[in-house]
Image (cartoon, rainbow, N blue to C red; front, side, top):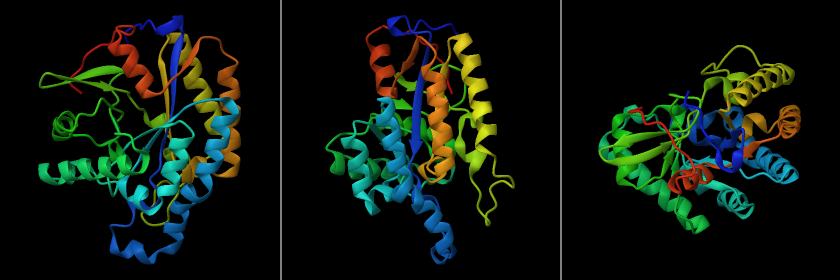
Length: 278
């Protein structure tokens, strides 16, 4: 990991991000349309979880990054407006939460354009960030991120700090993710398809995330949490997140930032980044 000099002499940087998948990842399957328990569990995030998240962010006076599939935005425009009105950044996350490696160039391009148009119509702002569904990104996706003028991506895992991905002369900012900092792997459960056999206790996840934060804090790294409203928005888990944020806030020199904050610092030459092909 390259030792980064963060802006304003910060010791490390931290971003909170939320993927508002809701029903988008399930609805393409005709069988799932009959599975109301599955769909309602997914809808819980936009019906209940989002409000809990927004209240918590307001309590700590923090801004976060939300990635929203086009389908979610279409079926619940109010949620998109609420996130935007609270001052949070919104990026694209597919339309039906499609795996990118299954898509032709034309199909993936149409999804980018459609998703951007939907979010732009609701918020009046052009999305500049992207996160690939399931974090599956391909060379074709990178080309289309360039074509559709995205400024940053958050799907790759090649470093502990932000870096730059060159795409035929275009430089894309990458905000790297990690499976251990994703609530889905810890908490989500679905009967069919079965996603894990253990629903972890919040205290266990709190210990895990505290340990990773502390190690990155010591290294001067970048702590990026990926969370889902239908998962982290459950009552005991939002309390766990509140406890984590209180712990983090007790440390000096943490730069709470959105991807757009990092992009501006990079463009203003206040942040020097490594460059990798993926």
